[in-house]
Length: 490
Ligand SMILES: Nc1nc2c(ncn2[C@@H]2O[C@H](COP(=O)(O)OP(=O)(O)OP(=O)(O)O)[C@@H](O)[C@H]2O)c(=O)[nH]1
Ligand SMILES: [Mg+2]
Image (cartoon, rainbow, N blue to C red; front, side, top):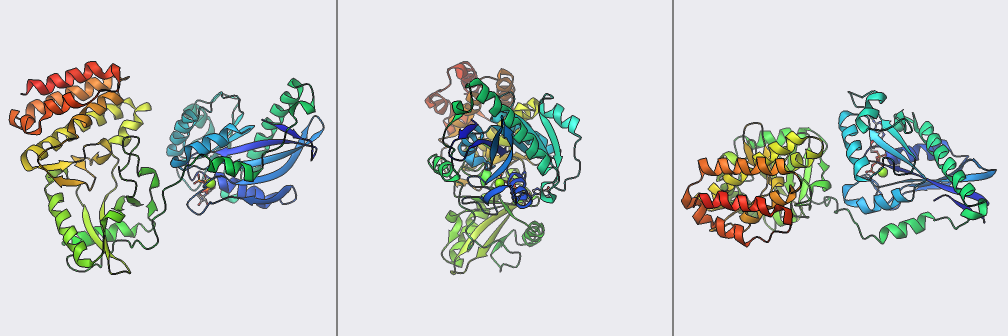
């Protein structure tokens, strides 16, 4: 999309820095803004961005090189990394004459890079690509040949090692990308019969900002500054279990930084996350801290009552309660208090299922575990009237047992969503017959050995399965098998 801007007599090209959140895209452009003072036009701009990351883009204009005798004016533009801003990212990627994929140079960073390349179809897309492996301070950096193999990139893609924050590799990266953009611009000029053939008005930062705003995306608001964190010093009645709770909260907070995980919120059914979009999830080292405005109470007394109720429900989970789970109150400045759950950070069944693209065994194991979790939930519901939200993002394997990591526990006589929860896994895997097989085999085994006929009847399961509307036609046969498994018990 290189163009010739007749007003300024320059060829305008765009180099787009993209990649997963926090990889160092903005740092690259910031370093260039500092080091290329003589060649840049204006300041770097970053509308709406803050410490938590880029909200729209960073923008810097610099001069560099010639295309068929015409000077080049290059727009360096970054994309947001946040998963909630995928449309913005895609739109900016599509406007690139050359792309720089910035990745963290660790095993995890490369795995994220693979997923990113696939998600945005960046291999062989026609837009030239440079990959920058940004070292951060990570140990276990991979060599570049190994990176190329893991990312499945051919030799046409340059891979540059960098430490963006120290400025290392930053210039080399931009030079390579600009050279690619210039070659593309030259081909466009030749194909269009001369420089006038690509004459157009260049998009400005304000125009791009307007286009991105038009997409209507937003990131969930950050934790309001007035939400207090749980404290091990909270008074009597403010923590459960009272014996071990304080130590666990102390350990969780000792990790120092709490990172808010917006990416896990409000994506029930789509990704590894909690269903409610107002949940506040913080990661503190190897602990997870959760609360929400629904768990803020106007008085300390009301909060203490809620803590007692919640603790009673948690106790009913038995083995499904993750070890070291703590409920803790955090009084706020307005005489109210927030109820926090502190628990070990566990990778949910949902996240293991999503890893299935790379690791089929992970997906199969997670589906088998989900079958166990579903039968655990049925037992709780039929024998103790304890109703869980049966979704793979609410369960995890803690190394010993399947555990329930959500706070949503209610008491009730029936479990209306159970049929749908069972069928949804089949529909999701409709194109992976091995996964459906593993799931149904596990369900059949678990149900045969652990559930009685009365349990199935009490839950009204056959009826619940009949009532679910099948949305994926190819799943129909497997749903019939599920119905038969349940039917065999009645
Ligand atoms: N130690 C170290 N930290 C780095 C390096 N490059 C970037 N960082 C840090 O990583 C964090 C994220 O960097 P950004 O440049 O904001 O990352 P980004 O890719 O723009 O992130 P999003 O806009 O959220 O997608 C910042 O705190 C940087 O200072 C590096 O080479 N070494
Ligand atoms: Mg950024």
